[in-house]
Length: 206
Figure 1 (cartoon, helix red, strand yellow):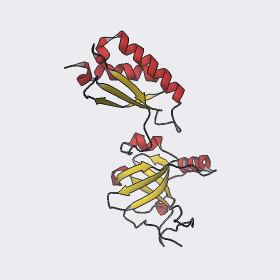
Figure 2 (spheres, rainbow, N blue to C red; figure 1 turned 90 degrees about the horizontal axis):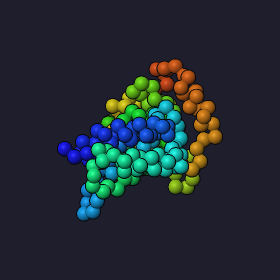
Figure 3 (tube, rainbow, N blue to C red; figure 1 turned 90 degrees about the vertical axis):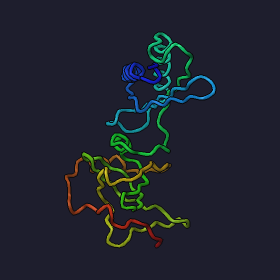
Figure 4 (cartoon, helix red, strand yellow; figure 1 turned 30 degrees about the vertical axis):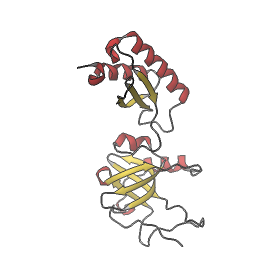
């Protein structure tokens, strides 16, 4: 088995180098085409940190990884390989719990396994449950949308109840976001502050 197929030494080397820069290995992608193989390493901050990885730090880690690959054919083999180190794009679908932990404070577009569409801010991840605040946004005329009558603004969804989720690009996050996150982390479980995942959450115009 080739080094590209095995990836054991590659992952061990990447994990060691990235740890020295405060980064973690998220994913390894191998692309084979007509030319040389392309190895794409997706890196990110640890799941207990918010924000985005510093691009200068990623560049430094990339240079060190390239040096490690050049110095040891066991990492990627002796044949030429194009190595790319990058961070996850905003279009990435959130699947694993660590993806959600890294997205605390972000506005998400979700669909539950029951088929309910939600637009909500992820405030905390409590075990395998997402603590969310629904934010319907505005309609085409700029008017605030309202939640259906009887629907709670705050809800909790189990990881297994989420069919799909993506981060929504946001240019003007709430000014009190840090306070919201702190309060969500500190708040005890409240059964009265939960909306069932199957409850209708479609928005309507005022």
